[in-house]
Image 1 (cartoon, chains in turn brown, green):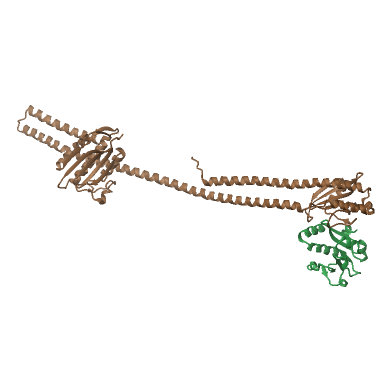
Image 2: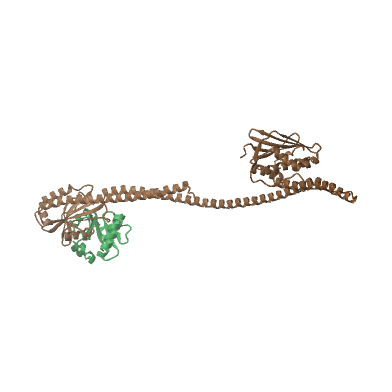
Length: 476
Length: 130
């Protein structure tokens, strides 16, 4: 089966490729997005760890006591100084920086470098997710966690300030959500655009698939229709073949009838002569004047006539026997052969037959088929002239460039223009049903066109109808 | 109580101050052990409009409790006071305070003052006592 590339298949493939590429891009984008968020997160943590280390060391160097609260209570100037130093790190990124300690399970502010929402010294503090804050005291390890509940905050970083292996306070850095939001908003916008494109591509894909399905359905319908049509054509061809066979059969029957009629015509004269000879023999016998010499002479005559009858049958049999091989034959020979069969009948009907054969060369044809056609045309002319006063048939053979033209013209007045186009149709006849089957000209045309590779035409001359057989000179 | 507190806190983030009112309703009903509390507020009275528990009164005398956003607006001396900042809490005889610190909600109660007004200090509130 031959595969045909259709535009709809190309569109489908393009749509699938587009979606696959887009999904791949989207996946890549999501990985990059995750990577950006993670990197941003980690970078911030890393940076804040460094800050908190410095701050922690600074605080530890300034507060020379394990009890930060008592020390800062006394050294207000150091408290102020440290708070100012801490406030230097407050930026748009780090919203709150403060130090808390834990007194009787209660957290309280020691230092607050925050710019706004500043807490008082030793102010009680109840953090959200307090267990994490407690765990820093317990585990002595820094900790960071993301907020989902606190407005404007992103991450809280808790750094234990350890002195002599004991957590004395926690340095807290609250990350502002604003810079993170900016990045997230930008990424979300991009994500929205991607999703929008994704929906668009899916929509386009669905449309293309839908159209493809419609196209496939339409093609299936067309395919079924074609199959039906093919079947119908086959049926019609079969019908025509059967019709042609029937026509051929009828034509053969008609031909046989004509042959018998012509044989009968040819036999009439010799049969009369045989009859006369027999009567003369009988007369001599009755008058007892018969002698051997007389009998021998008459027997010889009878034998000749019988041979003539036999020859006539052979002539007809050969004439109508279809030739399977092409032969070189001249028109002169063909016409002579035809006239041998029909000449007597023409003479009897007082028809003048003139031949003008200018082209004398031999042509390479199926001899008997051409003979049958010429016989049929002469016979038609004979039939037309039967009741006419001026009975004349002119046969001409001449060359026109590459064409060898055989013409037979009768003096019957021509064919009515109204029926001229139909005379080669099967079963069309101007004769009564007894004399015409309507197959002669039809079969002649088929023989000339299909077997002799020529054409059979008709036109009217001043005298009558002219039938023309045109064959190519180089008819191989 | 903690769960409620967190719920209010989250809701506050989402739905502004209306859930702060809910906290007051829960807290004050526990302290006063009654379902209707007459409240005198120095400002933001409109926010209490829809409360079925807290009834805003025009004068201190009619109030069960005085809620002050600014301690300087204090006019009634014999009524329990509830404030909305830490400074106001430590600088007054308020029974408690509710305020936001570093983005986190803070509730503190003064046991002495609560008891001096013969209010009920529920067990669930003890953790907020300073």
